[in-house]
Image: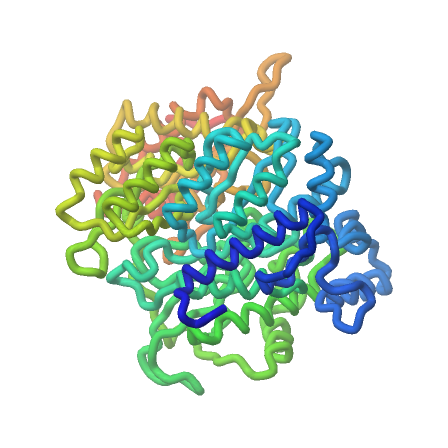
Amino acid sequence: MPSGFSSEQQSYIQGLAIGADVARSVRGLPVFASSGTTVSIGGAPATPRGGPHRPDQLHYDAQDRQSAAGGKLVAEERAKREKNPLDQWDEIEARAARGEFPKGIDVFLTKYHGLFYVTPAQDAFMCRLRFPGGAVRSYQLAGLADLALAHAGGYADVTTRSNLQLREIPAAAPAKVMVGLRNLGIVNTGAGADNIRNVTASPLSGLDPHELIETLPLAQELNQYILNRRELFGLPRKFNVAFDGGGRVSALEDTNDIGLHAVRLEEPSGDSAAGVYFQLALGGITGHEDFARPTGVLLLPEECINVCGAILRVFIANGDRTDRKRARLKYLLDDWGFERFLTEVEKELGKPLRRAPVAAYSRPAADDRLAHIGFHPQRQPGLCYLGVVLPVGRLTSQQMRGLARISDRFGNGDLRLTVWQNLLIPNIRVEDQQAVAEAVEALGLGVEASSVRAGLVACTGSAGCKYAGADTKRNAMEIAQYVDDRLELDTPVNIHVTGCHHSCAQHYIGDIGLIATSVDVGDDTVEGYHLFVGGGYGDRQRIGRELFSSVRADEVPALVTRILEGFLDARESVQQSFAQFTAARSVEELKRLFTGSPAPV
C-alpha cells in the first residue's frame, strides 16, 4: 500500500479490494488477490493442501498429537480438518441462490464468515461484524443502515465487544451482505466460531486526557495481523483480546483471554526502565468465573502484537481439541501453570519477556462508570464527546443514518462503540452541545440516563438467540422502567442480564447480575432468572454471588427494586458503593435485609 495514504484510507482501499475480489468470484471471474490478505475467496484454498508452504499446519499437528495420545477429536475439530471453513464462498453463494440455510456441521463452519443461523429463535442469519477498537466511520454506519434495510431486519445491535450485529438476514441474502460489508471496508472474516473475536480497546483512545497510552492503533494493528495470517484461524475455541489505556471508560480487559492494561513503573526494576508499559494478564473468562490474572510481564506498545501472536500460537498448538468445555485458554493455564506457559511463549517469541513484580508498578485510578454517557471534555481544547444512550444497544436504520449525519456535521465522521452497548460521538465543539443534544433526541435517543440505565447491559436473548432462556432485552428494559418509576439512585449500579451459560452480558461482573432459567409454575414453565450480587471488574474485581434462584421474570423488577431500596436505606454513607455494601455481608444477611426474612432458594 503506498505510504502516501493515511491508515484510514489504506483500510478503506483494502476493503474495496477485498470486495472486488468477492464480486469477481461471484461472477466466475479471476480473483486478483489485490487485497494482499491470505483469506481465501471463491472457495479455493489460499495455499494448496500438501504444498510446500502450509501456514495452518500447526492446527493439524496439534490434532494429530492429541489423537495419538488417545484423545478423540470433537465434531468441530473433525469438520475443520476435513474442510477449511475459510474456503466456503462457493457453498455460501450456492445455498443463497437456492434460498437455503446451512445444515448440520455447516452451521458451525459458516460462523467463520460471521454468519450465525439462529433458528429456532429466528429463521434467519445473524451477521457479526468487526470494528477493531470499536472505531466506526460515519460512511460505514450509514452504509450499514442501508444494508440492514435491504437485506436484514432494518436495525443493528451494539454488542459487549464494541461491535455491531445485523439480524433477520434471510436465506437468500448472506452473500449480498458479505459483499456489501466489504464494499464498506468491513472485513468480518473469523467473526464467529473458533477464532479471535473483535479486538477491543479503550473507546476514548486519543481523546481521553487521563489515558496513559493510546490503544486504538494497537487494536487496529492486531486486527490486520490476524486477518493476514491464515494460521490464526481455527483455534481450539474462541479467543478475546482487549487493550485498556488506563482512561475514564473501561475496556473490561480483565474479562479477556489476553488483557493488556496500561501501568506506570515508577522506578527501574530488573531489566525494566521506569516508564509506561502494558501489564499482560491472561485467562479471563468470567462466564467460567475467572478473571485474567497478571503475569508480571510488562510490554512496550511496539512489543504487544508479536507477543499476542506468540501466545496465540502456543494456545493453538496445545489447547484442548477433545473437550469443548475445556478448550479455552484458562484451562490450559490451569493445567500448566503460568510459568510453563510463559516459557513456551518465550520459545515461540525467540526472546525472554520483560518481568517486574506487580507491586513495582501502579495502575491509574478507577474508571468513571458514567463517562460513557452524556457530554464530557476531551484532551483536545474546546472539544468534547457525547455518549449516546441506546436502549439495550439497539439502533434502527434511521437512527444509524441520523447519527452518521450528526457526526459529519458536528464532529469529523468518527464514532466509537463501547463494551457498555452504546456509542460515542467525539470531536464536538463545546458550543455545539445543545444543537447536538437536540439532534440526537430527535432520533428518539438520549443524552442522559439514570444510574440504572447507564449501566444496563443485556444480551440478545430469546428473541434472537437459540441458546437464551428468556427475552433479556425486553426484561432489562422492564427492570429499568420499574426501578426508575420508584426510586432515584445517586450512585452507579450496573445490571447485567444474560440469557444463557455463555454469559454474553457477563452477569457475574454486574452489581446485580441475572442469568435466565426456566421456572415451574404449577403445570407450566415460564421464563425466570437466577440473581447474583456484588460483581465487579478492574479495581472492584469480584465474581458475583448467587442471592436468589429461579425467580419468575415478571417478579424480577420488584425484587431488584427492593434490593436497591434496601441498599440505600442501610448503607453506611453515600460514598459506600453497592459492591462494597454487599461484599461486607453474607448471603443470608443480604436475603434478610432485602426480603425481611430468608428468601426462597
